Length: 81
Image: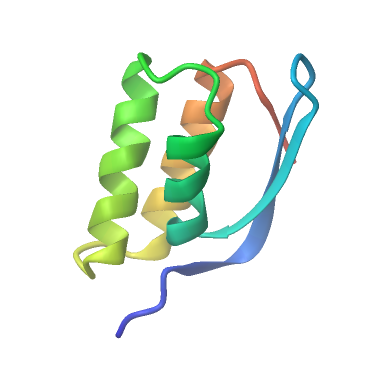
């Protein structure tokens, strides 16, 4: 099974809700998107969902999901570090 982890973890913060999550893989990103995401209607959200699925199924490298999650976080006005 191919790894879904990326080398540098991301920290996602939502100042409105106090959400503070560290994400290290496409699997964790998918869970975050489904359980704790503030805006599920943005186009970047849907791209991130798809990218996570592609990485988990072995069709894309982990960096694809990482980049997509960053874009979705920016779109949702979350802080990324």
